[in-house]
Length: 176
Image (cartoon, rainbow, N blue to C red; front, side):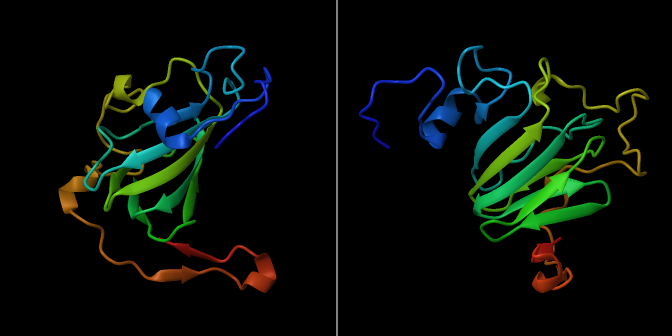
C-alpha cells in the first residue's frame, strides 16, 4: 500500500501482518495509545496468524465480550462446551456471546480475523486464571471438565448443517 499524501491525524494506513506482529495480533482496541486512530474502547480487531498445531494456552472462562471470528485461510477449530466448530473454507465464521467458554486449535496454517466487543482494559488471556470465575472449578458451567483441543487430535469430519434457503434468509450455510 502506498500513500503519497501527508498523514492525516484521524487516518492510519498499514498492513495487517506486520502491524499485528507488534501487539500479539491486535490491530485495534483500548490498548493502542489514545489519539491513535486504532484506539477504541468499543471494539478490538485481531489479525491472527497461527501455524499448524498452534493452540490457545488455556480455555477462556467467564468471557464478558461478544466475538466474531472469520477464517481468511487455513483450517481452524474452535472448541465450546459440548461442541467443536471447524472453519474450513475462506469466509466461514462463528459468533459467540458473553459467558461462552472457548478455546481454539489451528488444524492447518491459518489466518483468522477476530472482532471482539467491547474492548476491556486489563483483560489478557495469558493473565486470566484457568479455573472458573467464582467456583475455582475446572469444569464448564455446562457440565464435565473441558479438554484442551489437542487432547483428541483433529476434529472428526462433521456434516454440513443447511440453514433455510438463501432466498429465505440470505445467510447461506453453517459448518459445525
